Length: 95
Image: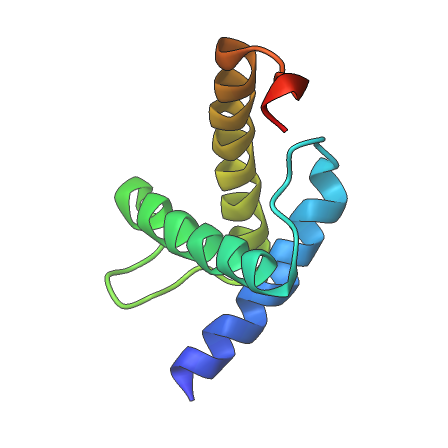
């Protein structure tokens, strides 16, 4: 039941983070949104345990997962924007 609950919280957190962020290069789709939220929850739990907000067996809740997902989205957008600006525009002749 713990994995199913994590996926449900991750889906909600990923959806809320995508609503808040509204960046142009967001990952889309049901699975990517759920993965975004789950990775955000893992990031928030790890950071919270390192800072001392959570104990060793505690995890981040919905708000922490949303904040973690926003951090993951910011990193995603930095990577995607670097990749698109460094390669230049697509060449139509290759089609």
